[in-house]
Length: 114
Length: 117
Image (cartoon, rainbow over all chains, first blue to last red; front, side, top):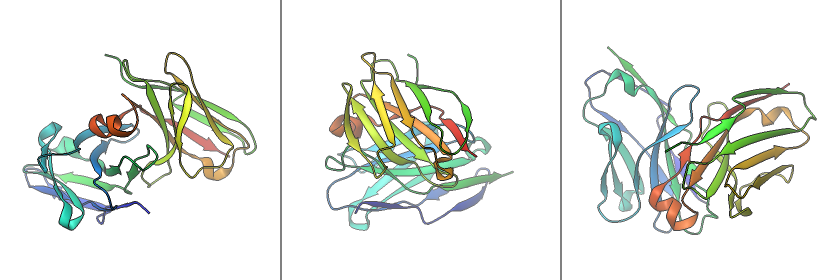
């Protein structure tokens, strides 16, 4: 069965510090991979996606992620975090034969301290 | 370009009642997916509608049903509400299912917060 693991439930970083959020998936075929961000009381906003091609993808708000097939990972990174980045981050996986559904991780809550 | 709009934003229902949630998809999107997000969890796929037909379903009982209209808007209906149905219900639109939603991803609405008491 497909699954997505976000090992870090909560991360705290200082403003200006670098950030890496981890995502591991369990799926046999080539997946579509996504990172979404959710602010309190809001829906999910797409940060970036991997469909095929270059395994390092750039997204909005200065985020990037790297698809590593050998490690079944799709970690999200940002070189310098801003206070406005505080939110919940979700990794999601889909594929052609998943019945049109995406599988989401349980999320990582990011706190940014001054 | 309008985004995905959902109504109502909040709703309180009593166990055993029925509820209808509504979603207008983003302009140009013909596919609508519904997700349930329980508190502290990631979204879980309920079902997807494409061209007014169900186009995939997650592990939810039949009392969760939906509709899609010719203008691509959609409804989620839940019968015989249970306390565990309390969650944020998210509607997501896309240019299609399968490869297209993989290529472009979803656009999510802000959700409907359903509380069952």
